[in-house]
Length: 419
Image 1: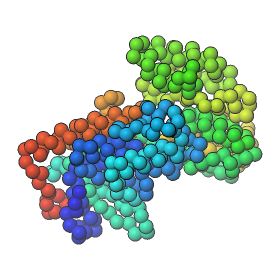
Image 2: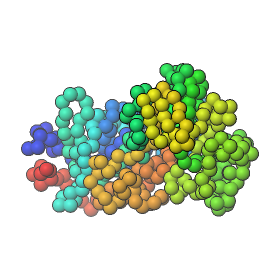
Image 3: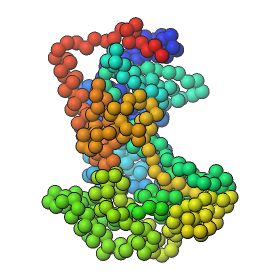
Image 4: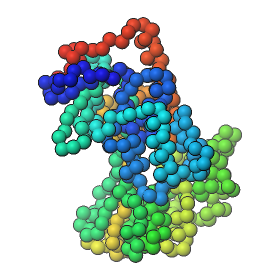
């Protein structure tokens, strides 16, 4: 990478030509692509809005978090987890692994740079990525100009905060799961957990462990599966069965085994969807909950399961069944979303929801040098698969251009933005 000029252009913006792809995001997806490109000797620039790698893991996850799947399904390309790590590494262990990963492959992101826009310039056949510095009180703009753009900002870039009648009038604390760290400060308090996915279940368990009084809102149906079946990871077992059996049959087997282990979850107010857990995941991207102890607390009454919310009042919540609960705090385990539509000025490859329109496994490559890494709804394994395909494709283009001619650097006059 090198800058056209040390001078700002007439828009007060520094222009930088990138001799290779620009990668937006220094989470696991961006790091995986970077490592694969580094192995092939292809230069790149990683842009990260935060001041660290994997900011979601470092700054927006709760303390007790562990990987929900065995480590062999969560390692990034070119580097396995340390042998001494447990089957389900902790948050701190995973962060240490990622920091070691970045160090091993000499990945040095441009930190504190938030992408404002990325647009393909048809005239120059180049991508223009404009960032604003988020470090310090004085903001400065930089325009990165490149031939290839890798979107690796993630499926979970922003927390989703739903609009619920009366929530703004509630007098107690209201926080999203991304801001929750521990249940320690909630001891003795009545906490309403809105959401019953993996986060909602685990935060309810954590609150219960700290002697809080959690009530978990279960508005829609959800599959709850044991994390392990007969000493083997449920995910690992499913992957093995899918090599020999059709998806619908694997779903049936998992549900029968789950019934023997967990019993009938409907007795506790948790309805199962009509589609099987793997079918639902493949068709709609909805991940089943892997139980690590929350269901036992639900059975014992330590976690109270409630239905949908009608409205919030000053110190209470009214449910759709007419019941009213006095509560001290609200914890929104309402999920996350992609932020790609807010900055990527492109509508052919990415849909309005911030995910590629082309379904898995072909949603990693668009046109004009545009790529997407980590939008498969298949976790870290999906991000790793994307990274390998993307790096191989970029390497083909890169080598082809080197064989034909030396790459010409666009001039300041020809390719400067005229916004």
